[in-house]
Amino acid sequence: MKDIKNLDIAGKRVFIRCDFNVPKDEFGNITDDRRIRSALQTIRYCIDRECKIILASHYERPEPGQYEERFSLAPVAKRLHTLLKIKNEIYMANDVVGEDARSKAEKLQGGDILLLENLRYEAGETSNDIDFAKKLADFADFYVNDAFGACHRKHASIHAITQFFDKDHKAVGFLMEKEINFFSKVIENPVRPFVAVVGGSKVSGKLQALTNLIEKVDKVIIGGGMAFTFLKAQGHEIGNSLVEDELIDEAKAIMEKATQNGVKFYLPVDIVVAPEFSENTTVKFLPTQEIPKGWMGLDIGPASSRLFREALNDAQTIIWNGPMGVYEMDRFSKGSIAMSHNIAQTHATTIVGGGDTADVVNKAGDADEMTFVSTGGGASLKLIEGEELPGLEALK
Image (cartoon, rainbow, N blue to C red; front, side):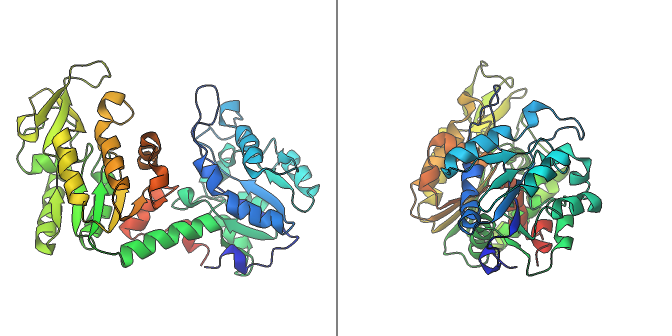
């Protein structure tokens, strides 16, 4: 794949696919602009070369054809202008490929920026429609994909659009290049000991990633809801905790494979349990062997946090994907926050998968202490699984 530095873009029209799918509060205010800040390097590079810049992104999942204000990218345009610190206005289109977008694109001068409305307002985006992709391609002379968080999806602005640009007119942006380099180099050639910390709610979403990691790491630490499938596979009573009974055999196979490969496999030794899924419910801290029937585990306990910290002490490379509990509720966030602090305090190269894991790191205030925080949870997981990403394949 080419990167943007290999393209002759000076003074040309450049279409940049970004990932501006940022969280907002109930009033529409952006609460975390990390994904916008991550795109700045590529955008500034184009501004410096007097390009006419068209930015495009999706935001959440609106019903196609229904332009609802809560799904608009208008707040992103404002935040982008603040972060870029440029005199030029950032033009905001009222549609995606309609009359307003086309007329504003035609008026762009060198260094100007036009942000198209939410790509998912158009049904053709998620269906990878070739006609819609052609309309997007008509905006520009060059195509740059800097949306790592969406490149595992076969959508029109990521996949079909590349058919309209030859190899000298399409490339990855700086963010995408950084993401790919970190994950591929770390997974293929890590400094050891190499530790994988895997959490989140379900084994099914991370089964292939775990299977792949067992072949590459020295230690695996399991937390979150997925831990209960492994605990049940070991014969423990897990009460009403989240479990995937159909994957118990796979969980056993992963643990057996770890033993065969000499990989140390860590599971929680104590659990924060409650009779119901609620912020105000009664909680108990119990060893994993003593989870009562009718109760559910919602976080790892303090003894597990200490055990995991010891397991991380000699690590030289750590990859973390998935929280240790229901971190959205303060009462059940302590295990995830402790894991973030423990990883941040090591001297290892630390790579944090995006999504929920990045949210935990931000909540813990540890983002600056991590070597790299990915902008894409699903995409980083696919890379760990060893899968081809449609957005990258289309650029080869």
